[in-house]
Length: 378
Image (tube, rainbow, N blue to C red; front, top):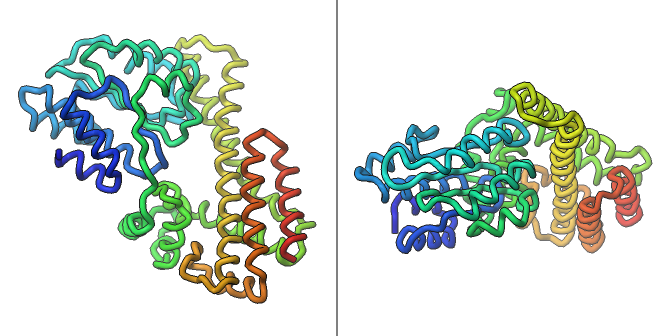
């Protein structure tokens, strides 16, 4: 098995086998690497690209070495990532669609990698279809996606999918411990305890980037907000709308993403890209909606995890608790609590998360959820 691929896919055995087979028997023209953020898609794509270029080069070692550098100076490796909430349409057209028709500068292959492919606008995805369907024989395209729903089915169906599984908790915990300080509040960050790292690794659900987010000030506040929401339900105090802060945080994040996307689109218009003011507004709103929904969903998932932990402690199963750094308040709240009640509460949270996918009113859905939780728990 190839050493470069092996090291990049250490925790992804099926992906490692698939890439090894592709290199041995002949690679496809297009791949879709999909799975949670932080699962190793980026490292696997760079290793795969390096091997594709190396096997078609007169000097494999040098081609591999340059392709593995980040950023890579290899002229036949094109790697693009969104500059803001979405990819720039013109960049996709120029660096991928048009460039795919050019012969390799050296060797016999060209490799194009598109990070966060779910951030491709519909316009870019539709323009990319022909390149995916009938590329030159020397072209290989790799799309990386953490949110499969963001890709058009016509795009996904033209790629060979490789599914990345969530990373094990032990791997996440080790990587988080090795990260060091990662927020602007260095003093607070340097003082974090192993229990907080253990909690973030478990709450990360196999997603390294999400686990890292939970160790930032924003992530800590999101966790604290989820705890306050459940505490209010336990105390019979949901009349104070404890979910309002959670919703406000999601809306703020969405507004920031909308503004960033609008700014990027307006720059494209200034550069000559034809796009109406209405199109700019619609795309910016979609980007903001995606971010707002993601933050709100994470907040609700954290509420569900807190309820799950209450049920675990009420049943005497401390070893399966996710919020390892909050055992004391969890234990106090779980005293004399029937574990079936918080377990049912976690199910109600899941039902609400699913309902939000149907574009129901977020505020009404949250209000209904927490009043139901109050009736169940208090």
